[in-house]
Length: 120
Image (cartoon, rainbow, N blue to C red; front, side, top):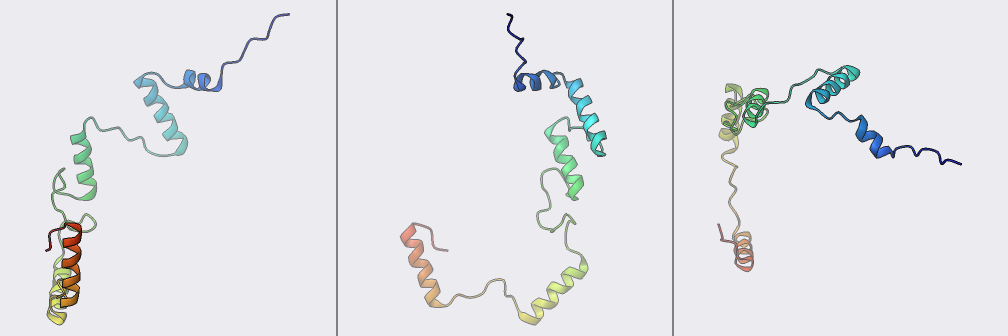
C-alpha cells in the first residue's frame, strides 16, 4: 500500500504564493488597493523625496523641519493670534515664568545637589 502524498505545510504554501519579484509585488499591491478602494501610492525613491513629501503635506518650509512652532503645520501665528497673546499679556502680565517661593527654591536646590544635577 502506497502512502498518500503529503500536502505541503501551510507556511510553505504561503511562501509559494508570495510575490517574489518587484513587479509581482507591485501587481499585488495594485490589486489590493483596487479591492479595498484606496489609491495606489508609489513609494518614494529616496529619503530626501520622503522628507520633501512630508514637508509639503505638513506645510513646512523645507524637508529639515524648518519652522518649529506653529502648531498644526500653519507656519507661524496669524495676526489675530498675536493680538490675542499681546492682549492677554497686557491684562495678566508675563505669567510664563512665575517666581518661586524661597522654600520651593531651597527644596529644588537640595534635590539637585543630592542627585548631582546642576541647579538652574
